[in-house]
Length: 407
Image (cartoon, rainbow, N blue to C red; front, side, top):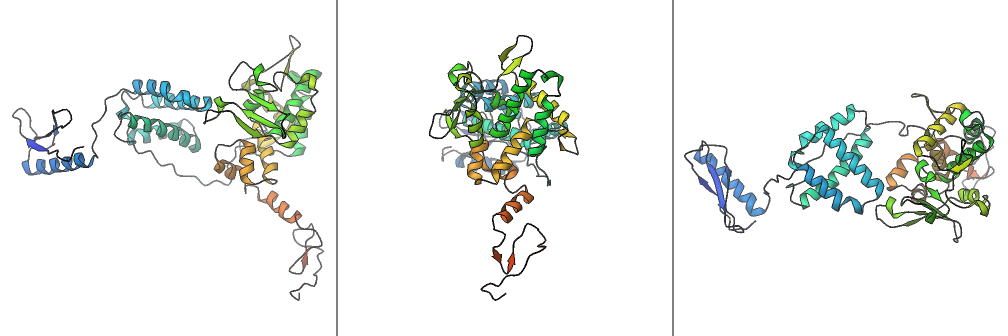
Protein backbone atom coordinates (compact mmCIF):
# COMPACT_ATOMS: atom_id res chain seq x y z
CA UNK A 1 0.00 0.00 0.00
CA UNK A 2 1.00 3.64 -0.37
CA UNK A 3 3.01 5.27 2.43
CA UNK A 4 0.84 8.43 2.42
CA UNK A 5 -2.30 6.54 3.49
CA UNK A 6 -3.76 8.05 6.65
CA UNK A 7 -6.55 6.41 8.59
CA UNK A 8 -9.02 8.70 10.31
CA UNK A 9 -11.68 7.95 12.93
CA UNK A 10 -15.15 9.12 11.91
CA UNK A 11 -18.42 9.23 13.84
CA UNK A 12 -21.74 8.49 12.13
CA UNK A 13 -25.00 9.21 13.94
CA UNK A 14 -26.69 6.10 12.64
CA UNK A 15 -23.92 3.78 13.89
CA UNK A 16 -23.17 2.71 17.44
CA UNK A 17 -19.43 2.20 16.94
CA UNK A 18 -16.92 4.63 15.50
CA UNK A 19 -15.69 4.06 11.94
CA UNK A 20 -12.14 4.31 10.60
CA UNK A 21 -11.49 5.05 6.95
CA UNK A 22 -8.86 6.18 4.46
CA UNK A 23 -8.75 7.51 0.91
CA UNK A 24 -7.47 4.85 -1.49
CA UNK A 25 -4.88 6.59 -3.70
CA UNK A 26 -5.56 4.16 -6.58
CA UNK A 27 -9.34 4.42 -6.78
CA UNK A 28 -9.65 7.81 -5.07
CA UNK A 29 -12.51 6.37 -3.02
CA UNK A 30 -12.96 6.13 0.74
CA UNK A 31 -12.50 2.70 2.26
CA UNK A 32 -13.91 2.22 5.72
CA UNK A 33 -14.58 -0.38 8.41
CA UNK A 34 -15.88 -0.40 11.96
CA UNK A 35 -13.45 0.01 14.85
CA UNK A 36 -15.61 -2.24 16.99
CA UNK A 37 -15.82 0.35 19.79
CA UNK A 38 -17.64 3.61 20.65
CA UNK A 39 -14.79 4.87 22.83
CA UNK A 40 -12.68 7.45 20.98
CA UNK A 41 -9.31 6.58 22.57
CA UNK A 42 -9.74 2.87 21.80
CA UNK A 43 -10.91 3.64 18.25
CA UNK A 44 -7.80 5.77 17.62
CA UNK A 45 -5.58 2.85 18.67
CA UNK A 46 -7.40 0.45 16.34
CA UNK A 47 -7.13 2.97 13.50
CA UNK A 48 -3.40 3.42 14.11
CA UNK A 49 -2.87 -0.36 13.93
CA UNK A 50 -4.82 -0.58 10.67
CA UNK A 51 -2.85 2.33 9.22
CA UNK A 52 0.43 0.56 10.04
CA UNK A 53 -0.80 -2.63 8.35
CA UNK A 54 -1.83 -0.70 5.25
CA UNK A 55 1.49 1.10 4.98
CA UNK A 56 3.45 -2.15 5.43
CA UNK A 57 1.25 -4.03 2.98
CA UNK A 58 0.15 -6.60 5.56
CA UNK A 59 -3.55 -6.00 5.17
CA UNK A 60 -5.54 -7.34 2.22
CA UNK A 61 -9.24 -6.99 1.66
CA UNK A 62 -11.04 -10.32 2.07
CA UNK A 63 -12.22 -11.95 -1.13
CA UNK A 64 -15.81 -12.99 -1.71
CA UNK A 65 -15.01 -15.42 -4.55
CA UNK A 66 -17.13 -18.56 -4.45
CA UNK A 67 -15.51 -21.96 -3.93
CA UNK A 68 -17.26 -23.20 -7.07
CA UNK A 69 -15.63 -20.47 -9.20
CA UNK A 70 -12.21 -21.18 -7.69
CA UNK A 71 -12.46 -24.92 -8.30
CA UNK A 72 -13.53 -24.42 -11.90
CA UNK A 73 -10.64 -22.01 -12.53
CA UNK A 74 -8.11 -24.35 -10.84
CA UNK A 75 -9.29 -27.42 -12.73
CA UNK A 76 -9.27 -25.52 -16.02
CA UNK A 77 -5.96 -23.67 -15.72
CA UNK A 78 -3.79 -25.77 -13.37
CA UNK A 79 -4.78 -29.44 -13.42
CA UNK A 80 -4.18 -29.96 -17.18
CA UNK A 81 -0.49 -29.23 -16.56
CA UNK A 82 -0.18 -31.93 -13.89
CA UNK A 83 0.18 -35.70 -14.25
CA UNK A 84 -3.12 -37.49 -14.78
CA UNK A 85 -2.80 -39.38 -11.50
CA UNK A 86 -2.09 -36.14 -9.61
CA UNK A 87 -5.10 -34.45 -11.20
CA UNK A 88 -7.28 -37.38 -10.10
CA UNK A 89 -5.98 -37.11 -6.54
CA UNK A 90 -6.66 -33.36 -6.42
CA UNK A 91 -10.22 -33.88 -7.65
CA UNK A 92 -10.69 -36.52 -4.96
CA UNK A 93 -9.37 -34.09 -2.30
CA UNK A 94 -11.76 -31.38 -3.50
CA UNK A 95 -14.67 -33.84 -3.38
CA UNK A 96 -13.79 -34.81 0.19
CA UNK A 97 -13.55 -31.14 1.17
CA UNK A 98 -16.96 -30.38 -0.31
CA UNK A 99 -18.57 -33.43 1.28
CA UNK A 100 -17.33 -32.54 4.78
CA UNK A 101 -17.09 -28.72 4.81
CA UNK A 102 -19.32 -27.70 1.90
CA UNK A 103 -17.66 -24.24 1.62
CA UNK A 104 -19.67 -21.59 -0.22
CA UNK A 105 -16.69 -19.22 -0.47
CA UNK A 106 -12.92 -19.71 -0.56
CA UNK A 107 -12.44 -17.55 2.54
CA UNK A 108 -14.64 -19.97 4.50
CA UNK A 109 -11.72 -22.42 4.51
CA UNK A 110 -10.25 -21.36 7.84
CA UNK A 111 -7.79 -23.11 10.22
CA UNK A 112 -10.65 -24.20 12.49
CA UNK A 113 -12.60 -25.67 9.57
CA UNK A 114 -9.49 -27.49 8.36
CA UNK A 115 -9.04 -29.00 11.83
CA UNK A 116 -12.62 -30.24 11.61
CA UNK A 117 -11.86 -31.65 8.15
CA UNK A 118 -8.92 -33.66 9.54
CA UNK A 119 -11.03 -34.96 12.44
CA UNK A 120 -13.75 -36.15 10.09
CA UNK A 121 -11.25 -37.82 7.74
CA UNK A 122 -9.87 -39.73 10.73
CA UNK A 123 -13.43 -40.80 11.58
CA UNK A 124 -13.75 -42.07 8.03
CA UNK A 125 -10.78 -44.33 8.72
CA UNK A 126 -8.13 -42.51 6.67
CA UNK A 127 -4.52 -42.99 7.82
CA UNK A 128 -2.48 -39.94 8.83
CA UNK A 129 -0.24 -40.48 5.81
CA UNK A 130 -3.27 -40.24 3.51
CA UNK A 131 -4.59 -37.19 5.37
CA UNK A 132 -1.18 -35.55 5.07
CA UNK A 133 -1.27 -36.11 1.31
CA UNK A 134 -4.73 -34.53 1.13
CA UNK A 135 -3.53 -31.46 3.04
CA UNK A 136 -0.46 -31.12 0.81
CA UNK A 137 -2.63 -31.05 -2.33
CA UNK A 138 -5.00 -28.59 -0.66
CA UNK A 139 -2.13 -26.32 0.37
CA UNK A 140 -0.82 -26.26 -3.22
CA UNK A 141 -4.28 -25.34 -4.50
CA UNK A 142 -4.81 -22.60 -1.92
CA UNK A 143 -1.47 -21.05 -2.88
CA UNK A 144 -3.09 -20.32 -6.26
CA UNK A 145 -6.05 -18.81 -4.43
CA UNK A 146 -3.60 -16.37 -2.86
CA UNK A 147 -1.98 -15.61 -6.22
CA UNK A 148 -5.41 -14.93 -7.71
CA UNK A 149 -6.37 -12.64 -4.78
CA UNK A 150 -9.08 -15.05 -3.61
CA UNK A 151 -7.35 -15.24 -0.23
CA UNK A 152 -5.02 -12.86 1.67
CA UNK A 153 -2.86 -15.83 2.75
CA UNK A 154 -2.92 -19.61 3.00
CA UNK A 155 -4.78 -20.66 6.16
CA UNK A 156 -2.64 -22.50 8.69
CA UNK A 157 -2.90 -26.23 8.20
CA UNK A 158 -3.37 -28.63 11.14
CA UNK A 159 -0.21 -30.36 12.33
CA UNK A 160 -0.29 -34.12 12.15
CA UNK A 161 1.62 -35.79 14.96
CA UNK A 162 3.59 -38.79 13.82
CA UNK A 163 2.68 -42.03 15.54
CA UNK A 164 5.61 -44.27 16.38
CA UNK A 165 5.17 -47.69 14.85
CA UNK A 166 7.49 -50.64 14.69
CA UNK A 167 6.15 -51.57 11.27
CA UNK A 168 5.17 -49.11 8.55
CA UNK A 169 4.00 -51.54 5.87
CA UNK A 170 0.47 -52.95 5.81
CA UNK A 171 1.92 -56.13 4.37
CA UNK A 172 5.47 -57.43 4.02
CA UNK A 173 7.85 -58.70 1.34
CA UNK A 174 7.07 -62.33 0.61
CA UNK A 175 9.81 -64.97 0.42
CA UNK A 176 10.84 -67.01 -2.61
CA UNK A 177 9.26 -70.11 -1.07
CA UNK A 178 5.96 -68.23 -0.58
CA UNK A 179 6.09 -66.98 -4.17
CA UNK A 180 6.50 -70.55 -5.44
CA UNK A 181 3.49 -71.55 -3.34
CA UNK A 182 1.48 -68.81 -5.02
CA UNK A 183 2.48 -70.13 -8.45
CA UNK A 184 1.24 -73.59 -7.48
CA UNK A 185 -1.98 -72.12 -6.07
CA UNK A 186 -2.89 -70.77 -9.52
CA UNK A 187 -3.60 -74.35 -10.66
CA UNK A 188 -5.99 -74.83 -7.73
CA UNK A 189 -8.31 -71.90 -8.41
CA UNK A 190 -11.46 -72.77 -10.40
CA UNK A 191 -11.44 -69.35 -12.10
CA UNK A 192 -7.94 -69.97 -13.45
CA UNK A 193 -7.97 -73.77 -13.78
CA UNK A 194 -7.92 -73.70 -17.57
CA UNK A 195 -4.39 -74.72 -18.66
CA UNK A 196 -3.88 -71.74 -20.95
CA UNK A 197 -5.45 -69.37 -18.46
CA UNK A 198 -3.31 -70.65 -15.60
CA UNK A 199 -0.20 -70.27 -17.72
CA UNK A 200 -1.02 -66.64 -18.45
CA UNK A 201 -1.55 -65.92 -14.75
CA UNK A 202 1.74 -67.56 -13.77
CA UNK A 203 3.43 -65.44 -16.42
CA UNK A 204 1.78 -62.38 -14.88
CA UNK A 205 2.94 -63.33 -11.36
CA UNK A 206 6.53 -63.84 -12.56
CA UNK A 207 6.38 -60.47 -14.28
CA UNK A 208 5.34 -58.71 -11.07
CA UNK A 209 7.99 -60.62 -9.10
CA UNK A 210 10.86 -59.65 -11.44
CA UNK A 211 9.77 -56.11 -12.38
CA UNK A 212 8.58 -54.45 -9.18
CA UNK A 213 5.81 -52.81 -11.22
CA UNK A 214 2.63 -51.66 -9.54
CA UNK A 215 -0.32 -53.73 -10.71
CA UNK A 216 -1.82 -50.80 -12.65
CA UNK A 217 1.50 -50.15 -14.37
CA UNK A 218 1.90 -53.81 -15.33
CA UNK A 219 -1.55 -53.97 -16.94
CA UNK A 220 -0.71 -50.83 -18.94
CA UNK A 221 2.68 -52.15 -20.13
CA UNK A 222 2.94 -52.52 -23.92
CA UNK A 223 5.60 -53.83 -26.29
CA UNK A 224 4.87 -50.82 -28.50
CA UNK A 225 2.97 -47.85 -27.06
CA UNK A 226 1.58 -46.98 -30.51
CA UNK A 227 -0.64 -50.06 -30.14
CA UNK A 228 -2.30 -48.55 -27.05
CA UNK A 229 -5.28 -46.25 -27.52
CA UNK A 230 -4.72 -44.45 -24.18
CA UNK A 231 -2.19 -41.90 -22.98
CA UNK A 232 -1.18 -43.71 -19.78
CA UNK A 233 0.51 -46.76 -21.36
CA UNK A 234 4.08 -47.72 -20.48
CA UNK A 235 6.44 -49.12 -23.11
CA UNK A 236 9.17 -51.77 -23.12
CA UNK A 237 12.40 -50.94 -24.93
CA UNK A 238 14.65 -53.97 -25.26
CA UNK A 239 16.58 -52.71 -28.29
CA UNK A 240 18.53 -50.06 -26.37
CA UNK A 241 22.08 -50.54 -25.04
CA UNK A 242 20.36 -51.34 -21.73
CA UNK A 243 16.68 -52.37 -21.53
CA UNK A 244 14.50 -49.46 -20.45
CA UNK A 245 10.92 -48.55 -19.56
CA UNK A 246 9.21 -45.50 -21.06
CA UNK A 247 6.94 -43.74 -18.57
CA UNK A 248 4.38 -41.53 -20.41
CA UNK A 249 4.09 -37.82 -19.79
CA UNK A 250 0.54 -38.23 -18.48
CA UNK A 251 1.91 -40.10 -15.45
CA UNK A 252 4.77 -37.68 -14.78
CA UNK A 253 4.65 -34.44 -12.79
CA UNK A 254 7.02 -32.83 -15.30
CA UNK A 255 4.54 -33.73 -18.09
CA UNK A 256 7.30 -35.25 -20.23
CA UNK A 257 8.08 -38.82 -21.23
CA UNK A 258 10.74 -40.33 -18.98
CA UNK A 259 13.12 -43.26 -19.49
CA UNK A 260 13.70 -45.44 -16.45
CA UNK A 261 16.00 -48.42 -15.85
CA UNK A 262 14.66 -51.94 -15.98
CA UNK A 263 15.82 -54.64 -13.56
CA UNK A 264 18.09 -57.15 -15.37
CA UNK A 265 15.96 -60.07 -14.14
CA UNK A 266 12.86 -58.50 -15.70
CA UNK A 267 14.73 -57.86 -18.96
CA UNK A 268 15.73 -61.56 -19.09
CA UNK A 269 12.12 -62.51 -18.33
CA UNK A 270 10.89 -60.40 -21.28
CA UNK A 271 13.62 -61.70 -23.58
CA UNK A 272 12.21 -65.19 -23.03
CA UNK A 273 9.06 -64.17 -24.93
CA UNK A 274 9.29 -65.18 -28.62
CA UNK A 275 9.56 -62.15 -30.90
CA UNK A 276 6.46 -63.27 -32.76
CA UNK A 277 4.44 -62.73 -29.55
CA UNK A 278 5.81 -59.29 -28.74
CA UNK A 279 2.81 -57.20 -29.68
CA UNK A 280 0.06 -55.39 -27.80
CA UNK A 281 0.08 -55.50 -23.99
CA UNK A 282 2.86 -57.51 -22.36
CA UNK A 283 0.40 -59.25 -20.04
CA UNK A 284 -2.58 -60.74 -21.88
CA UNK A 285 -5.22 -63.00 -20.38
CA UNK A 286 -7.47 -65.68 -21.81
CA UNK A 287 -11.17 -64.91 -22.10
CA UNK A 288 -12.70 -68.29 -21.22
CA UNK A 289 -15.89 -67.60 -23.17
CA UNK A 290 -14.36 -66.40 -26.43
CA UNK A 291 -11.00 -68.21 -26.13
CA UNK A 292 -9.33 -64.93 -27.13
CA UNK A 293 -6.49 -63.07 -25.45
CA UNK A 294 -7.50 -59.78 -23.87
CA UNK A 295 -6.63 -57.25 -21.16
CA UNK A 296 -8.32 -57.09 -17.76
CA UNK A 297 -9.09 -54.32 -15.28
CA UNK A 298 -6.98 -53.46 -12.26
CA UNK A 299 -9.69 -54.28 -9.71
CA UNK A 300 -10.41 -57.70 -11.18
CA UNK A 301 -6.69 -58.56 -11.38
CA UNK A 302 -6.12 -57.41 -7.77
CA UNK A 303 -9.05 -59.47 -6.53
CA UNK A 304 -7.85 -62.64 -8.22
CA UNK A 305 -4.29 -62.20 -6.95
CA UNK A 306 -5.61 -61.88 -3.39
CA UNK A 307 -7.46 -65.17 -3.95
CA UNK A 308 -4.17 -66.72 -5.08
CA UNK A 309 -2.49 -65.46 -1.89
CA UNK A 310 -5.27 -66.93 0.25
CA UNK A 311 -5.15 -70.27 -1.56
CA UNK A 312 -1.39 -70.39 -1.05
CA UNK A 313 -1.81 -69.57 2.66
CA UNK A 314 0.63 -66.64 2.50
CA UNK A 315 -0.32 -64.34 5.39
CA UNK A 316 1.59 -61.05 5.29
CA UNK A 317 -0.01 -59.40 8.33
CA UNK A 318 -0.98 -61.79 11.17
CA UNK A 319 -2.75 -59.02 13.08
CA UNK A 320 -5.20 -58.23 10.28
CA UNK A 321 -4.92 -61.72 8.69
CA UNK A 322 -4.16 -60.03 5.37
CA UNK A 323 -2.98 -62.42 2.68
CA UNK A 324 -0.42 -61.70 -0.03
CA UNK A 325 -1.43 -59.34 -2.82
CA UNK A 326 0.24 -57.84 -5.88
CA UNK A 327 1.84 -55.11 -3.79
CA UNK A 328 3.60 -57.68 -1.60
CA UNK A 329 5.34 -58.97 -4.73
CA UNK A 330 6.53 -55.40 -5.32
CA UNK A 331 7.72 -55.21 -1.71
CA UNK A 332 9.73 -58.39 -2.20
CA UNK A 333 11.33 -56.90 -5.32
CA UNK A 334 12.24 -53.73 -3.38
CA UNK A 335 13.74 -55.71 -0.52
CA UNK A 336 15.91 -57.81 -2.86
CA UNK A 337 17.30 -54.78 -4.64
CA UNK A 338 17.76 -52.73 -1.45
CA UNK A 339 20.61 -55.10 -0.56
CA UNK A 340 22.20 -54.68 -4.01
CA UNK A 341 22.14 -50.98 -4.90
CA UNK A 342 22.39 -47.53 -3.35
CA UNK A 343 19.16 -45.79 -2.20
CA UNK A 344 19.28 -43.30 -5.11
CA UNK A 345 19.33 -46.17 -7.63
CA UNK A 346 16.62 -48.05 -5.74
CA UNK A 347 14.43 -44.94 -5.81
CA UNK A 348 14.54 -44.92 -9.63
CA UNK A 349 14.04 -48.67 -9.84
CA UNK A 350 10.93 -48.44 -7.62
CA UNK A 351 9.80 -45.23 -9.40
CA UNK A 352 9.32 -43.38 -6.13
CA UNK A 353 8.68 -39.64 -6.42
CA UNK A 354 10.70 -38.93 -3.26
CA UNK A 355 13.70 -40.73 -1.78
CA UNK A 356 12.14 -40.47 1.69
CA UNK A 357 9.66 -43.15 0.58
CA UNK A 358 12.54 -45.40 -0.43
CA UNK A 359 14.37 -44.80 2.85
CA UNK A 360 11.23 -45.31 4.93
CA UNK A 361 10.09 -48.61 3.47
CA UNK A 362 13.11 -50.34 2.00
CA UNK A 363 16.40 -49.02 3.40
CA UNK A 364 17.26 -50.06 6.94
CA UNK A 365 13.87 -51.62 7.63
CA UNK A 366 15.11 -55.21 7.53
CA UNK A 367 17.88 -55.44 10.13
CA UNK A 368 18.34 -59.22 9.81
CA UNK A 369 18.75 -59.03 6.03
CA UNK A 370 21.25 -56.18 6.32
CA UNK A 371 23.18 -58.08 9.01
CA UNK A 372 23.42 -61.16 6.77
CA UNK A 373 24.85 -59.03 3.94
CA UNK A 374 27.49 -57.58 6.30
CA UNK A 375 28.56 -60.96 7.68
CA UNK A 376 28.61 -62.67 4.30
CA UNK A 377 30.77 -59.87 2.86
CA UNK A 378 33.77 -61.10 4.89
CA UNK A 379 35.47 -64.46 4.13
CA UNK A 380 35.36 -67.09 6.86
CA UNK A 381 39.09 -67.10 7.45
CA UNK A 382 39.56 -63.31 7.55
CA UNK A 383 40.60 -62.02 10.98
CA UNK A 384 38.95 -59.23 12.92
CA UNK A 385 40.83 -58.51 16.15
CA UNK A 386 41.96 -62.11 16.39
CA UNK A 387 38.64 -63.83 15.61
CA UNK A 388 37.66 -65.63 12.43
CA UNK A 389 34.16 -65.06 11.17
CA UNK A 390 32.21 -68.26 10.76
CA UNK A 391 28.59 -68.66 9.87
CA UNK A 392 27.52 -68.78 13.52
CA UNK A 393 26.48 -65.43 14.97
CA UNK A 394 27.59 -66.50 18.44
CA UNK A 395 31.07 -67.36 17.18
CA UNK A 396 30.90 -71.08 17.98
CA UNK A 397 33.95 -72.93 16.77
CA UNK A 398 36.02 -69.80 16.09
CA UNK A 399 39.71 -70.02 16.85
CA UNK A 400 41.76 -66.95 17.74
CA UNK A 401 44.44 -66.02 15.24
CA UNK A 402 47.62 -64.09 15.81
CA UNK A 403 47.42 -60.59 14.41
CA UNK A 404 49.70 -57.60 14.19
CA UNK A 405 48.05 -56.28 17.34
CA UNK A 406 49.68 -59.14 19.25
CA UNK A 407 46.42 -60.96 20.12
